[in-house]
Image 1 (cartoon, rainbow, N blue to C red):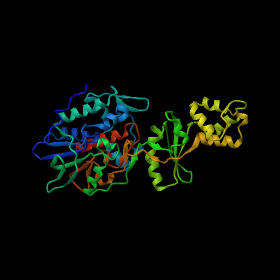
Image 2: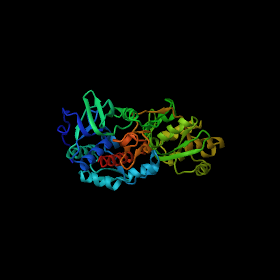
Image 3: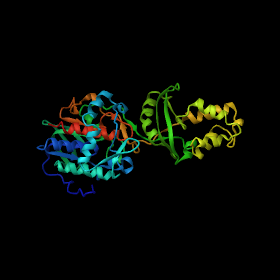
Image 4: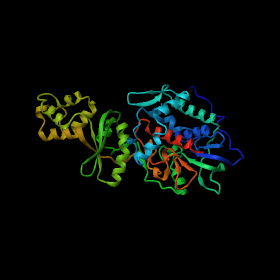
Length: 423
């Protein structure tokens, strides 16, 4: 679908300051809630407010500008935060086949890549956003931006929202404000203040799907630009393995990024807050056991250790770093490798301990871990148990998934549940 001019969709606020439903946040979840609210309840007056000058920033940057809409197999067990059973109840209301059909009907066909990720066949995130905006327009949604909401509260008949643009009252309020990730897009955590003011708890929040940092002089930082498959493991302070992720890893000037790093980041940050001695290790040769590597090194004879490691598909710069890290000579031969040096090299290659100093924060995080627990919502409607008439969807909830379209699927599903429940 060709890009369209949505100037007509962005209307000035009308003098009338009342409506049936106000949805705060025009991201993935907010747009989905608005579309299905308009389709399901056409008689309702529905206003969608967003503080950003340009709508859909997160959609446009997702998947490197291609928008990873969902994953071909969304397993609730891969989500963190609230209980798996609660997350499952929401996800099954609008599953992957329904997501594919929904976007197809909007003119956006999806293709599956080897990783299982589903992208628009055009590889253009703009097509996804345009389709959603068109659907909202066709559902008679009044979208106003930039209209940043600064306060929300109860009234005798419902709720009010207000900002520098004015004040509006409504019978039902939907908060699709996002978390704290990518604050320039508008999701700066204000939504958490709103839900607290209306009686909800917010669990501890932290950046998720976020790159991790190392000391500036760490040898890994000298490998900037190298990408390769690795396994990252989370260990307790005693060395016990807690969990692991195997995927592509990117070495950078500040530390580590890439799918494996992003996926393990929230678990590491959360676990370390409870166990300060917890740490991460990296296996540069996933799939090769320590005893197998040990046998290979012992059988090298007069062959070069360096050449052997390169034959394992390790980049030259990484091979050099590993050998120097173990205080060995670069041109060392197999029959010259001492036992202690061999053990050191095996450890460095298969389970190098990482000196993580922190993370790149919400500015670079793709999602926020934490939020409103799902047990505070009536899941059939995503309606607040403590504040009837208030509905929540998307990242403001305590649900976060791995990379690959899982977080978008949560947005589509939770937004759909809210939109179809505003009766």
